Image (cartoon, rainbow, N blue to C red; front, side, top):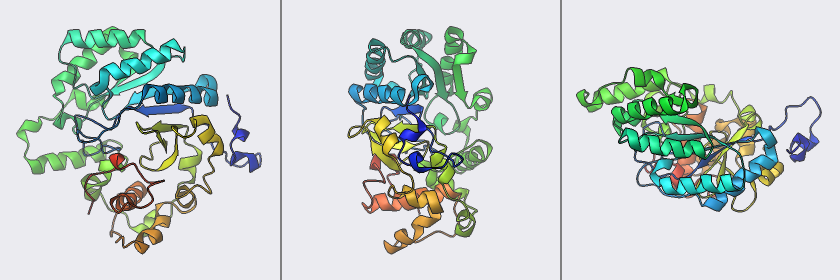
Length: 343
């Protein structure tokens, strides 16, 4: 396990100054492709998106986080929808098992594939044998616009019978217990239900969530948002996500690239990462998203009167940069952003 002082930022700090935490949890985004196009998707995934993480990249990153965090290292597989590439996901798990990398903390899915008890049971038995600790099922009004709730019910029921209730997470169980019948709702009613769901359950306004959904919940002025920076968000992030192209995102800050594992191992990215000097991150670190406004205005960005919060402001500006092919080394890839510019 690496020492905190192995990081270039931490090495110059005093004993009592807040340190940049070790990354010990890594979410491997196997693909941006998904059978859903949820309004709140942090990575703007849908059927038109692409990417498929090579097995070697997944294993190299897995090994790197073990070097970095030792016994505290955790890996989870996510997307997009990883079960769209079932055989490929199995190859990654087989390779990890062959190298004795330890268990997979969690695998996420929306359950679209749960067409029968036999299919569910066969796949979960295999995943259990290959070290999956927990299954996380995405279940909410947004996903259920695309996935039949009965498939999710089947997956949750069989998984709990087979794995035990403690190893099955449903996000959100409250919705699975009392789902909405979307077939009876008009488009306007569905939009209102989506807004109410975003108010009832935590939502981060990144990716597609920073578009129409955030617009409907925008009540904060730039002056209000400007009071907050992102220092603690970067220092306290104990995890990262790595996308199918190797881009590394700190915590849940999708679309802000802090390194690429195809160019440098994850533990070396952590060791060399200095939040006060890294492009764009340095501005967010000191000033928060409001600090990006001047550079955005210089490129003809027109600020809105209201935003849903600081993540919405940040995402809105970065979406503008992506649409105008700016800051591509730090802002991207396009797959992690909406395909249409938010108003």
